[in-house]
Length: 563
Image (cartoon, rainbow, N blue to C red; front, side, top):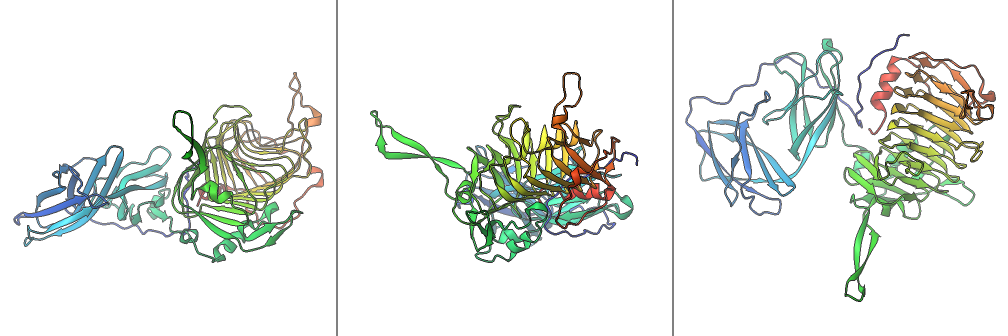
């Protein structure tokens, strides 16, 4: 089959609905011949104090921007008061205040009639600003994104990404496309939402999918029903993992148990604390770093099974490696959770679940082996499930499983912008790892300068993955690794490589050879479909598998990563 071209961008989904597209008249222009009335406002900060010299702008409630700014901002006085004249009608009032680097804002809807009482003063209370973010599947049309009543005119970038920023908390009517055309859509969206806009088929109009609140966002006290629903999705070698719903004994056996919920309430990691009882000769108090209360680290270091949830979206910067304790579920569903800094490591800390997380922007960026992995599973760790996670911007390796670790499944995850996505085991000249076991399925590999997966020893089952942009090889199966590679999509010139080492003449070194079984893969960019039976290795668990076709490519690219 010829090489195809797809344009698709990910979106976090808990549920979805279709927004109907219909033809409508252009926006009405407020105005008329009636006498002007007066609207008066007092703008204040969230603490109740006056927002001195706040900026205020008034636009018709059904206004849609054409990219120009039709109304000037006006300033309140030192006490936050402002009066503005307008003809009768419905209006959107937007207020903004900047104090140093802190910007706050508010949107208020006002109905003004000819009998407006000038003595009435409405209060506008300012709050934290947020955004609505989205992705456009590019088709014949790349629509402008606007917000009714506000001066927001956003054109998606070349990748289809757009952000409607500087919005206060609230719900807004987002207009996608030209409302005078059939090929348009309108959706009610709240700040913090992520929209996925499908413009690929103009005959059927624009479809919009909007993320909704996840069950994990409710933070149930002791209701483990939603955690059980998560466990039901585990497959591959990680089957039997219980995370926060289980306890691992000294023999490595995992038995069911009810854990506790720990909610992460701050993005801080360590805080500096002064000890006034310990001062030096100059009277200076000794300072020390302590784990921040309510931090990810505090939850992760708890003894016993713990379901870690997040109160808010944000970037959680690890100032030191996070050495995770056993029997944990780190669950980012319903939030945009970005983990940066020094990365997460395990050390015989089995029975772990990582769900709906983005690992990005490491503290160490040198292209060498000292760079921390985003997530490192090592030293005999077993029963680990990594699901709907994104790994990005790590220079060398993003995720590794090594030194006797086994029974690991990676599903519906993304590996982007690194040299290698997954390192499975170490080269045989360092250590032989025949017992390690890894399942990788429905995952997306792109922007990798080396390999998608590097398997050194052990047993690898890779199926229904999409290797879209990998420079050297989709999978390296070497050092006696046994690799069962079925129904993947390889859009790379070399789908599978069997050797780790080559001599000075470029000939493969046989002692570094691996053994692969390739079955029903789609080699989009060509390449060799290798013969072999992986030394009769075949996974012994049950699993559902899709055909390797365009539908699978779009499905993996769209649905992998945080949902």
